[in-house]
Length: 172
Image (cartoon, rainbow, N blue to C red; front, side, top):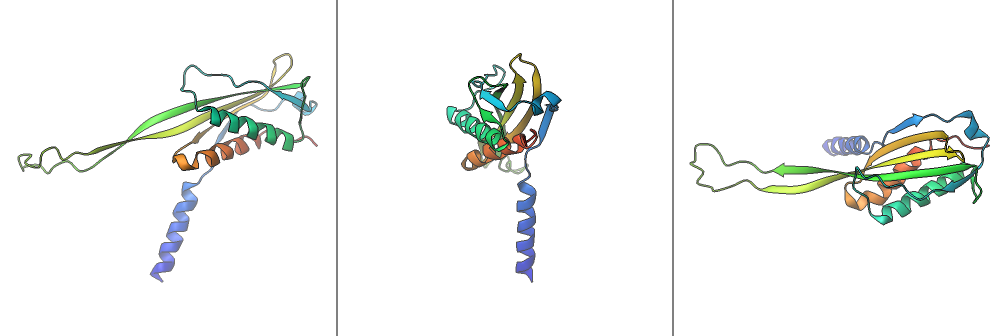
């Protein structure tokens, strides 16, 4: 019976830890988006306010966006009706885990017993904008996802792209 409780608790914790990132739709789809079916990918725009992620992240995001739009019924064309622009910004926050301080009253005879391990928590913000040839925004959204731990980086980016694309209307 105690083993069953431990297994159930572990499953609960895993389920809570893997929540999908939340999408912020800045502009909902306009009716004009439903009448256009071809798209072109613009080069990624760079954001000077944040650190740029590795080029492999850009390649993965662009491939995911392209495939997702194709799956939604859009088709890629050089003389497209839609322009798809995106930017990817890397955000880092330091994490510090401190080990116990030496006990008070021992005259600090243990020396400096404070060990500091420095880690960083990475996240990325993906901004996606779909506009017409006249540069009028037809849909815009953004998503922020964590990129830590590093061995799950590709899966986390892929999940963020998938969740963001779910907000775009599918062509029938």
